[in-house]
Amino acid sequence: MKKIFLCFGGLILSSGIILGQENSTGINDIKAPSSPASVVLGVQPSAFLYPKSAKALETTLLSNFMDENNEIVVPDNFGMEFSPYWFKDHSLSLEKYLYSTSFEEYLAQLWRNSSFSIASTQNFLLEDSTSTNAIGIGYRTTIYFSNESDKKTVASYREEIRELKKMSSRIIAEAEKIDFETREEFLEKMSPFIRGIVYTSFGPEKEDQANKQSDLVIASATTLEFNPNDTDSYLDAFNAMVTGTLSNPETGLAADSLVGQFKEYLNLRDGLSIDIGYATLLNFPTNTFDDTFAPKRSLWITPGFRFKSEQWKFLKILGVFRSTSYDLDYYKTYFPTQEVFQTSTDFGLAASGDFNRISFRLEFVSRNSETETPTSTNGGGTIQYSVSKKSDFQSIGTISYELSKDIILTYSLGERFDEVLSNNNIVSLLTLNVGFGGLTKSTLN
Amino acid sequence: MSQRKTYRYKNLSVAVQDNEDVTFTVDFISDVNTSYTLVDIPGNNDPEIDDEGSALLGKGSDLRSEKTIVVCDVDNLADQEDRITINFLVNGEVIVPFDKPKSEEPRPIIVLKIKFPEP
Image (cartoon, rainbow over the protein chains, first blue to last red):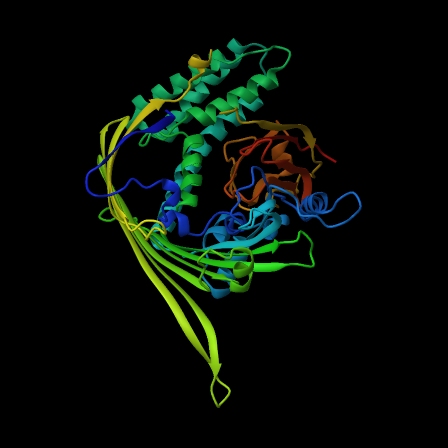
């Protein structure tokens, strides 16, 4: 059931302050974003376009970046992302898609997972509140490293799905073969066949389960709408019902559910993966292309590891690295009072886990900012620099206890990055989250 | 969840000689498809094809007594792929070029009903 969790109340337990979520810089804020372009721009467009072919990409660019006079314009509130590899067919098999074993295959995987993003706005505010045009251009990819545990999991899903499809395809082939004019005639011809196929697939030791599943399929077939002038529609519904009903006698999962689970697993596979992102910001302070600045560039590298073994599978570990460099001349001109360093580097590590009703999360983020300023040139012509640095550290631990299905008690304790306007950076927060059921069809009715 | 669609191609006909070997092929064109294909031929030795590949159905004369029914249950496991494109071939000739967007049906059930008459 969909849940809406509301923060019901907060309590300060020590000399801390309640800090707004928007001010926090946790691991989630610095790991590689799904759209680097919109993150570096600092604007999340309300609609994102995903052209799936070279032609669609061309159309998207021309219709958004060219006006009626064929002049280049910066569109407002615009976002797009595209993956060039997927513009063409390659007859790529699942195995080739999932597993890389040589350097060339890892390079191919890197390119397959590459996506480019563009985001733009006409409302990028300078410090004096001037609205200007700005574009974010980003790149992102993921490299996944194969391991035996993952291969076993994939093979297990494949085999389980195959066995169910084998059973349902036999039933569908028979249904497509027979002639019938009424639902009763169809069921009379099909029922013994369904029972025979399911029994053969399950084996004599699972006769009871075979009977139950056969009964379920036959009973469901009697409820499907039947039009004697359009028996194909009945067969369509029957075929879909069969693949959605027949289930693995061990797990109770039908092929439809298993495929859904398999797809979910493929997005969160066991083992090591590395997300890499890069983005650059382009700003046009006078809203012309004559004045173009690239004031900010960010690089993200996020290695993550998911454990498979029974002993450690409760634990997830994530490391993050983000390096951002700034054009100080630009910031001195257009954001004169803002404290900006030439480079800012974040390192973070997070670990999270679940034990029955208790879950925890530990985050550590270190930030180092520095600016090198040329001061003089020595006799040998070497430029001397003065370096200004700032280091900061954030560590937050959170523990949650599920009091009931809809009520979770959470306590966070730690130390945040220094606030510009406050020296108080201790976090000690107790919250109670109460969930309410989402809207249901009956509620709406 | 909406009902899975069945794409049914009836009245397919491929003329074959009595002593001619008949081979059926599933050929994936788009990326990261997976499928299980059952070829229900006259008799009890129905060939199966996991994902893509070919299966020998027998001699032409063995396939005349009733229609051959092919059931191909397809999944596509890559979010980035937006089409399911598969060619179905008999003896190297495409008899059904299947090409549908995943937005129409992400998990199609494809049924082919094929007759193998004499030339």
